[in-house]
Length: 82
Image (cartoon, rainbow, N blue to C red; front, side, top):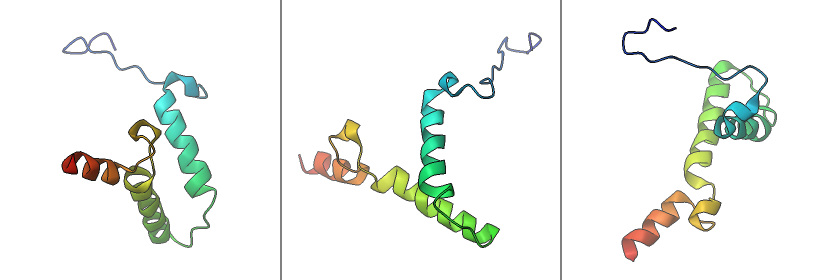
């Protein structure tokens, strides 16, 4: 793709090489083990609802070690009251 207008070349991770992007590899592993493998989906609508519920939990309710074991909401509330 050397003929890009702005000289930007798109480079994709190699299939089967999760170390190419450790963050997405970690997320994909959690998605599979905590949601996809743990659920029996009854319909596409059911799958969307369950995955969305898991996504909200993953992004909002799950404690983060980087935040001292707090959830993002608890950390934000702590910052506001400080």
